[in-house]
Image (cartoon, rainbow, N blue to C red):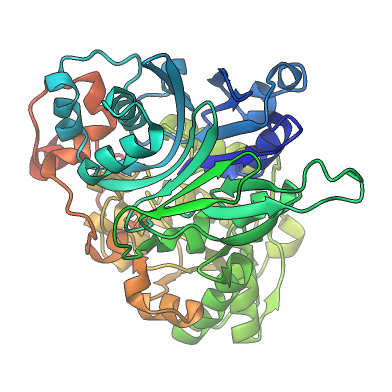
Length: 492
Ligand code: SF4
């Protein structure tokens, strides 16, 4: 995950638009936030742990001057949640500064560390992004774009990047395009009669942030493409590697905002269609359909439409709590569920419920939701999940790197049903997802569902979240990890 946003706004400071853009991407990462700006000569960076509105408040933005900016919100997949690991990262090279915001996860971190002066360089942070920034800054060319062309052929894994040097904002998407990245522009506004903001360009993890920042989407940045944005110039595109798109299908199932578009598909509509497909695949006799709020709502609406059952909201969500799955520790996740959701007794009591959610990762959240609904008087709880079971870890930017944390990797569907306490449980098939999206399988990464990893993952990568905090540690196999990992999910 992580959200990245960049803007070049000739004639005006870019910090406000970049902050607004990344604020619209808050759902992609809630651990830290940061912004880097350039006035064409000098870079300035501000970052901290916390939510975007806490970190980038109106007292700080006016001091961040210049028409070029990138901004970032973090969800950790490599390195701990500490200030040093907040992004954008920053590095000086031959008198010039460079800042980088990254969405994704690299899978050959050890190899890249070895390239950096034989692994002897001490990095101030412990993220793969810090490593990539150091490799770019150390490149002998002294030019950011040439450094990208020299370094990227050695980089493996998922990376959508927003990079800032003194004169340019640069967007980069890895050759598989695991994570989205969109190019947009700001048209002249009625409230901007002099047209100062016309000719402004933006890059963003999601199209919705471009809309919110007052721009229009131009196109997706292609897998394997570098886009260079400079004041007063049209964007320049360089295809640095052949593209073979494998967009993370989870972006469409769960992560992206419902008002965003990916591969030409609106995410709300995609999720509603997944619900229709789920109703066709897994019907059940019930009194009503309800979502697990908020992310299960579009698929629940589709399930109701497909099944002919009434749609009702059977739980309310505290709007001020973050997403449960995205919190970095199990302890915080467990606390998160109870403060986040409460059942509507009047709606669910005495009813046979179809409860629709977008995914089951560890099963602990779902178990608590089912218990809450039963306590509120539901007579039956039939769970319908608008994605297939997650059997395998993700190494491309989602923090599910240890298989034992995934309930479906060690339990059958019936065992999961028993663990969560539901009367029945069904998952949407991969064919159902594709039918809803009306796109071919080979456009997507489905690795966490079917184990078909587009970029091979070294066995020791599973411990790589903290690899730069223990770079000399011995690699471990998946088997050793399974044996060593704490089993938070009891076996049925
Ligand atoms: S493994 Fe799963 S979560 Fe990770 S990129 Fe592939 S589809 Fe997305």
